[in-house]
Length: 437
Image (cartoon, rainbow, N blue to C red; front, side, top):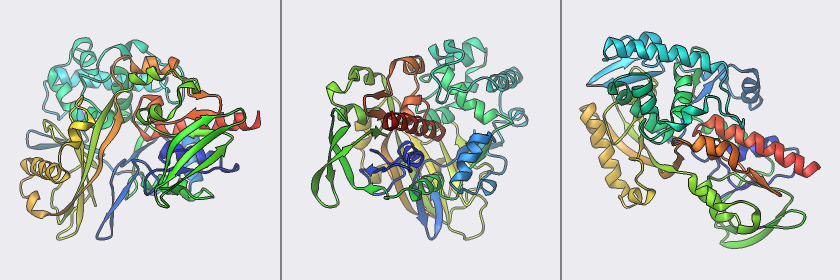
């Protein structure tokens, strides 16, 4: 297993009756599921929450990891919108829609959309499937769908922009209507619930990693792999021991983003590597502002409209107490489609000041309360489901060739932890078939 993000850890978890070795180039497993700590206070330093759908199979999966689901459900209001200097709590519910600063026809149009999404929710189940219901929605942008097909004013698109940038890597004008509506379906759903642990989804990754024996081997970078008649040969660089070594495996699962996998796969492995050029990515920064922060925000996830430097933030703990240490985790997707190199030309200290200035402009007094700033995911790539991408993805990219299997949420085209878990499960099933066939 190459890569100890959520896909790789899930695959290894489902294959733990086998001899599984997980290699991770980083210092710790978990991928974007990271946890930070400030004065003993845990906070999400990356992926922060998941959707608890109440589906028996998902419920069994989480319970199998002994995760405390009952304690993880986020109390309402889950989401709140900060717009024009005012908070609008519970912005993704029918009652919350009624108080948004929009024309009455726009509110009525949004209510109709929510009712339409509730119908689609019964039949849309794309994760892990090769089918894409309502494929015509993948050919247009979300902005086009909202404004041209639904007749909603641009203010609606503007209000949804922070959500799209944070969750889908780009604004409504750049993402597929299908992808945007699928994500919004979960937000507006009366069935699904948002769940979160104190340190975010790092708790899920930690539970998966702790189930494995031998443990994840960190500091290991795959340099080259070569398919053989009976398996795969790997050349690995051990950064901790400053040495290279070789491995032989019956099956290799590459749980890497496609931007990385295309540089590892040999030309003769069976994939048309040109097809990976169809994957597009945005870049991301997460900033933890630590101190005696007094910002009062009604939601768990708080969306800031009209701010180019950040999209949303989470407060830990959520309810402030006088003089208590708190962390404001700020999510800052970088402007799409500027490339990662543009971000990396910025000094981290300058980026921290930029984000602090942006927060201060909306919540005066915060800057003097911040004692430390920690940056995470600096330049992390996030898949962007642009119009037409999901259609291409579902039928044209092989996820296995010989004894090499690909696994990553990239291959679902939807940047969410549920997609990563499903990809890990699919890869494990393929590996088991190869090893027993």
